[in-house]
Amino acid sequence: MSFETKEDVLLQVLTQKRPKCTYCGKKMRIWEVPQFPFEDGLGWGTPYLFVCFNNRCPMYEQGWDNIRRNYGRHASYRCICYPGSNTYACMAIFSQNGATGQIIDDEIATAKLQALKTAIERKISFLEDCFAAKDWQSVLKVLLDPIEQDIIRIKAVDLIGEIGTTEAIEPIRNKNFGNGFLLKKIEKSLGKIHERFSTRECPFCSEIIRKKAKACKYCGGVLPVSEKIPPKQGIFDRQS
Ligand SMILES: [Zn+2]
Ligand SMILES: [Zn+2]
Image (cartoon, rainbow, N blue to C red):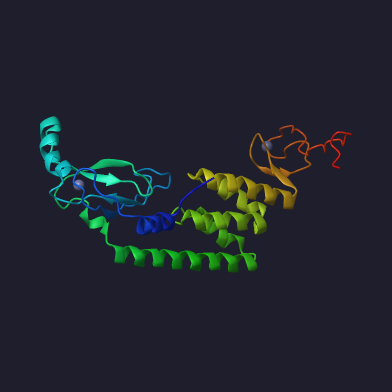
């Protein structure tokens, strides 16, 4: 049950001892992975990496020759290291300045971390205001926004469970949530909404129907009984 926010990784990157390149021994730099409009972990699986940008690094210097000989292309490699691990790998680059635009120095990293923290705090307090006003529509908007950080969306899904109405269910069902952790939370929150409104989703057509309905009024499907029969208290179940 672990997930890491961009903020977590940046903090780790800033506080961790800077790794040294396994090929040249030079200290690696913090590199921000370019953002793609995907939310399902495509790419490097981390928002920051350590990268050796030493132009005298043997991995880099010899890379040009290796790639030309083997693939007939003009490219080379930079040594990379995953934050919080000793996992080294390499990434292809296509010019001497390739990927250098995403290098961030410590000062910028610290400022970015502060900005991220402030943005998160502001958003959390916005969500709390929505909660107080029972404005579940605004909370839903945050939950459905793929650009929002997971930590914010997790907060939103908790609040939706508390104040959302059955109208919130369909838009959530129609959205593809990449994050497995978020998905579990969503099921829990939708369950809470159904509980509050005595509803459930028809297993045949997914329409929202009354919990006690014996047949679905939308598709006519005959429904299994939803209520759980409380277990009989036998002599062995009794708590002493
Ligand atoms: Zn190196
Ligand atoms: Zn139905």
